[in-house]
Length: 386
Ligand SMILES: *Cc1c(COP(=O)(O)O)cnc(C)c1O
Image (cartoon, rainbow, N blue to C red; front, side, top):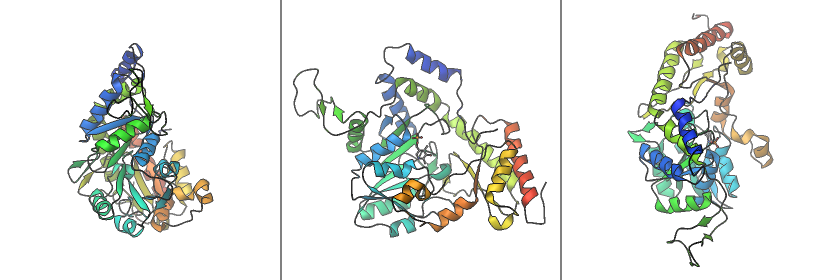
């Protein structure tokens, strides 16, 4: 079975980890700061704080933004649960706002209508790697004095109106889970231009404890440190950071390959009526974390589940991204009900095809052939394609 996503580690990546294992520091050593600087440079941000995973990083961003009980944070339901769980961790209330059915990203106009006096922040998600409408979100955030967080777990290396993802929001999160653009096994980062957020993120990552002489209230000796807030141990290890530094050098190559695969799919599926390929806005370059197709219900003799199973039977590890977050039993128990019509329409038709840089030409053509086979088997449309 061809998975929908997978890491690509080479000998240099492995050697980088081994080198750390043989060194003095395996955590809280020099590789963390080096990795943070490399990421910040790559995405045109001033500061970066590495975390044990992307979810912890999002939690840190909500903490740094000051999200607390009574605060509302608006996000999309078409995302991984971590995008809104981070708000719950801080005692805040996630508010789900509907998507645009062309880009599958949060619709800024609908989002603006959800703003109340309690709204504290926006978490915009770059679904599938295509950046959210950041220009509009920035305008809205300024107008209502909101903090703009970008969940860019899918979009490391993407650009928006000539700007790099990571250089636009107040805080931007990247994830280094193995299916993401580059991997550290588990890992995440927040990038920001704000010194204030940077300091808060550092504190939060390490128990709320600081040794920074400029921040200490007292000084009882060179052993001295202070706990200023209730933080967590959300640190990354030096093994992971070394892997990240090595992987980051291959990001451009990875992105180029993802784009190549996406172009091949889009070309191969052009003209298959009822099978919708991802729309790309003219002002952004996606990082192509996912290749999401939609199989419109009126166009097939069977439902999405049958189409999905048929593709799996062909050995294609298709997936569905995502179940609208508020439909999960946990969220239903919190009182969330169906509220985003377009998100639900999207969800009922979506199937993600495998896309990752390590796929070879045979893999790509296997996917294309399987899609065409399943399409031809179940389409309602008379003009069939071979
Ligand atoms: C992967 C992902 C996360 C969480 O990242 P982890 O590193 O797995 O904790 C958050 N949001 C989105 C949209 C993701 O895809």
